[in-house]
Structures are given as C-alpha cells and as structure tokens.
Amino acid sequence: MSNEHLHHDPAHPLDDQGNPLPHDSKRYKDTIRVTIIGSVIDLILGVAKIFVGFSSQSQALIADGVHSLSDLVTDFAVLFAAKHSHREADEDHPYGHGRIETVVTVGLGIALIGVAVGIMIDATHRLFEPNTLMSPGMLALYVAIASVISKEAIYQYTMVFARRYRSNMLKANAWHSRTDAISSIIVVVGIIGSMAGLYYLDAIAAISVGLMIAKIGWDLAWHSIKELIDTGLEQERVEAIQEAILDVHGVTHLHILRTRQVGADALVDVHIEVEPRISVSEGHYISETVRQKLIREIEEVVDVMVHIDPEDDEEQAITTRLPLREEIVPKLQAAWQDIEEASQIKNIVLHYLQGKMEIELLLPLSILHNAQPGAENNLQERFRAAIAEIPDISRLTVCYC
Image 1 (cartoon, helix red, strand yellow):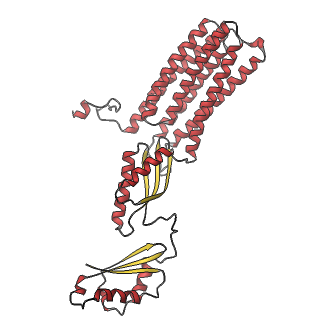
Image 2: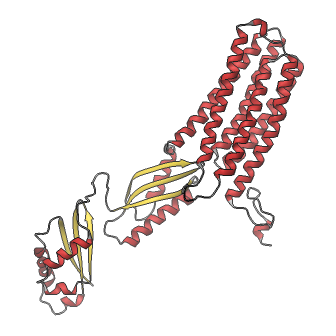
Image 3: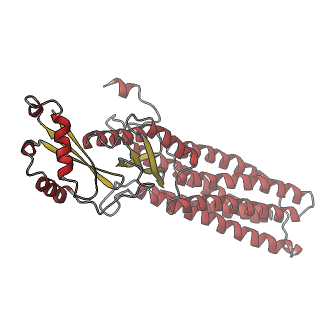
C-alpha cells in the first residue's frame, strides 16, 4: 500500500478498496451524512417540543416545535438536491446540475419565511385575546434549553462541511438549525417570564422568533435568487481574478470580465489583450495559461472562457466589412502580378487592426543576395504602389528569411 493510503487526509476519505474518493463523491457522502444526522435530531426535538408545549401550556415552545419539524422538510429537500446536483454535465446541461442546489436554497429561504409568518400570526392573535395565553412550566423550560444546545451543535457541525465545499445549500440548512437554537433562547426567556406571571412574554417571544426566522429566510433566498439571474461574484473576488490574469506574461490588458455562479462553483468569461502580431499558437498558449491559473488559484472557479483580442474591442469596434483571406489574397496577387519577385512569396500574413488591414509578405533572403544596394526598400515600395488602389489596407511590410 502506498504512503498516500497510509497517511491520507481525514478530510479526503477512502473508498472500500482504499483509494481516495473523488471530490464530488466526498461532497455527496458528507452532505448526506450531515443532513441525516440533523434530520434525526429535528424529528426528536420537534415531537418533544410540541408534546411538552401542549402539556406545559407554552405557545412559544409549540411554535418552536413546528419550526423544528419544518426543518425535516428542508432536510429532505437537501437530500434530493445533493443527489441530483452532483450529476455529471450532459448534453442538456453542459454546465452541470449545480443550480439545483441554488433552487433548493431559494426554497429553503421561502420555507423559513412561511414558518415565520405562521408563528407571528398565531402569536399576535393570542396577544389580542388574553384568555388564550398559556402558562408554561419547568418541563417546557428544560426542553427549550436542550433544544438550544443540540441545535447549536448541529449548526456548527453542518457549517464545517458548508465551508469545506462552499455550499450555500448546506449553509442555508445550517442556518435553519441555528434559527431553531436562537429561537429556543427566546423561548427560554419567554417561558421564564411567563412562569414569573408575565404571561404575554411567551407570545412576544414567539413573535420575536418569527421576525428573526423571516430575516434569515429572506437573506438566504435573495442571495440564491441573485445567483439564478447570473449576478457576478463579489467585487473582492473579481479583483482577485483580475490580478491573477494580469500576472500572466503576455497579457497586456483585459476587459469584458464576466463572472457567474453555478451552485458552489463560479464560471469566468474574459477578453484579454495580447501583442497583435504574435502567432495564433502563442496567443492560444497565453489564454490556456490564464485559464489554468484561475482554476488553480481562485478556489471557486471551475471553468474559464478566454477570448483573445489584439486590441480593445470595447473602444475600437470590430470592422466586419473587411474581406477575409479567400477574398483579399486573389486581389493582392492580381495587383502585383507584374512584379517578378511576387512569384517567390512564401507567406502572406494578414493583421486586422483599428478597422484596417496590415499586410506582411515573407520573401526568401536569396532575393537580396545579388541585388543592388537599396533594393529592399525599392521592392517594398513597388509592392505598396501595386496595391494602392485596394481599399482598407493601412500598411504593407516585406520581410526576408
């Protein structure tokens, strides 16, 4: 067995054969495990709080129990999303299925808001009808305290994996647990107040819980809605991407930098400028270097589309009326057919810059061996004069090799 298997990172589990599991497989297994553990605790706490709330006459504890049971619904939603969001990209979903997590997170946020509204409506109704107010006992207090401890523990446990995998869905589910813990704290205060004779404090505590849950639900849903409409990454992350791109040798400038999120991952689309007369292969190599550097150094970036520009096409509009090679080369050859050296042209390079065309001709060095001094400049002028009537050509250069 290799050293890698003997001293593996516990954050990177092994399969049954002792091989490291793929990242997506680890993510899926961890998500399932943490969600199932949370579901079991939600079920136990929800049933206990509702039962004790009725028996001990605590409206706030009953509301908190409903909140705990609502977590079960979101837990099942997380399990569904975890199963389907990590499927490989296919023909219908070329960018993968990561947005399933995003949609489920919106649903989790809306569910939180719905639970909050229900709690606040019921508690407000009881405030205006004092005869419906309840008077909780010590058992309700004990259950509420137990809820605070257990739900905060689940929050901390879930957030470990939410941060590890940059999963907003797990983060949303973790906050679902923490809202239960925080609401239980308020319930504790309300129960203690009610036990002291201030019966309305239990209802006020329930309303406070509802407001807090609604705020967190809105924040989670709104963040994911922005992701669904392709809102870009935070400015700090965009600046980090810009710095990484400009650090690549050969990149002279960048523009039209666009980012978007797909679940926990981010996609980047950027136009980079390079020296306009380098080869196509060098330009491609520079772009591939940019792509690999961003994926390697920017944690959430998983794919990059790099567009190579010889100039800033935001400021200098690309001229699409200029002829392509198949159209312009026959015109050039016809124009300089009377020039004897034209038959020895080895290559014609076309540059499309600033709305015009530049021509580079490559001729064999042997042409100059027996030529008179100054023949080089004279030949270049002859080629230039021959194409003077062809429009949109700003420059012609003759090179020898």
